[in-house]
Structure formats: C-alpha cells, structure tokens
Image (cartoon, rainbow, N blue to C red; front, side, top):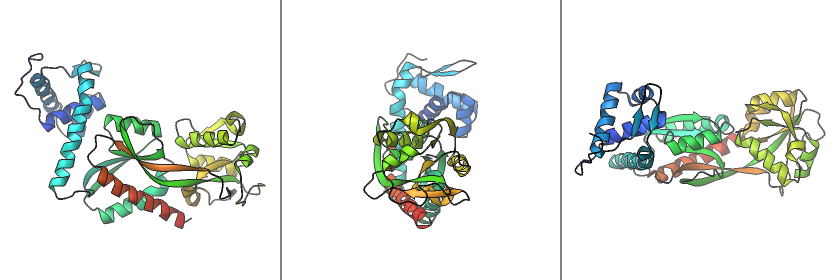
Length: 315
C-alpha cells in the first residue's frame, strides 16, 4: 500500500526504467512499446516501485498521465541511476572510453545533412558495436529532449544555455553569403558586416538557431534586424531558402559546410567575408552533467569534427 515505506526495499533497474519511460512519454501504451513489454507488465512494475517506496509517482486517469510532485522530484535521480548503470555495463564489457551499444544523438537541421553522412560512415567502421539513433530537430526541442532523458547528447551550436549540462566545443564554422547569380556581391571574398545592409536577408523559421545567428550578426553590424531581414518570408529548410534566392527574392547566409550541398545550383552565387571579420558559429556537443560517458562522447566529438572537415574538402 502506498504510504507504507519499506526501509529494506531496493528498486530494480527495470522498475526505475519503467518509471522514467512513463514520465517521459506521459502515456502507458507508448512507454510499454518503447520498453518492449506489455501494458500489464508495465503497470505491475510501476505499482511495485510505488508500493516499495510508499510514494505515488504517477497519477493515472483515463485521459492522461500526470507525474506527481514527488515523482518530479525523484525523476532526475532515477535518470542518473540509469545513466550510471549503463556506464557500468559498458565498462564491464571492457569498453572504457569506447563507443558501444545504443546511443541516441540529437542534431540540428543545419548540421545534419552535411556532417551526418561522414560521421555515420566513420562510426560504423571504427565502432561497429555502436548502435546510433539519430534525432534531427530544432535546438529548443533537442534541449528539452536532453533534459527529459530522451536523447543522450546533442550536436548543436553553442552556447546552448542548457542548465545541468556539459558543453564540449568542437569547431568554429564560418558563414558564407548566398546571393542571386549576377548580384553585385557575387564572388567577392572581402565582405564586411556592413555589406549585409544592402541585402534583403531570407531566414529560416523561428526556432532554428541559424535564424537567431543571422539576427545576431545583423545586430553586431549595427543593423536593425527588422530592416535587414525579410520579415514576411520564412522557410523551414535551407533548400527552400536557396530556391527563393535563385528566384531573385533575396539573399541569405549559410554555414560553410552547407555550400557544397545547397549552393551548387543554377541561379546562385557565393560571397565570403574577409579574414579579419568574425562571422561564424561554434559547434559542440551537449550532454547531461549526470552522464558517466563523457570520455566516450569526447571520442564521438572528434569524429564530428573530422566529418565537418571532410565536408569542406569536398566543397
């Protein structure tokens, strides 16, 4: 019975994983599917955990699942315990510092198409026992997924401003300016930030970090972002933005790794900033402070950097 705390009780990892999965998904059916067990087995594991602790962790109703205040307080500890258990298992296999087993990696859309192919090829060759699962999403969604334990780490622009997280800087990536073919800036390699003033910049939707990075560059150039950018036209992908630029509807900035994939099409031209102009973003890894796999993540970070460099060599 909930309320009768058994001081001798010790929860199993299976019970803790059940609680964490239900809390993250707010749905018993989804949690059962993810864990590969039946809903009755899932419910029994949760009941056993709650009775052993003498605390209600989850409120159940026909319409929704609610994590109780006690459950919210204990959830981070459950996640930390599971992270430590996973690390223990990896070390017990003699894989200290080696990537092995399941790993869920979040990555933002303005990195994924250009770095992922090389990264996944390299990890398959170097770490054949690694089972990567890739989640591509906007920064704000990845940050929330990281906090909720739905991903192990994220590859994104820094700073991420994620509380309770560790950041590992990997590389600085310059921006290039994309203009319609025949534009007065086409082909130039000596741009200053002031040159952005002459452009009607097309942006990705709010929520994409590249959108915010371009806005920050405008402010750095003492330009009013509202005046310097097209406040009406927005797109959800760089591919769409490129089509708009090619049609003469504006210009944009892209990370240099995107040039080979996105910009080698009719109607587009590239311009770059002079060497003493800082127009770049920093890319890095972000993971929970509670994770015990920092050494493994650092190894993955090295491979991300190499994949980025490889994308530039093909450009």
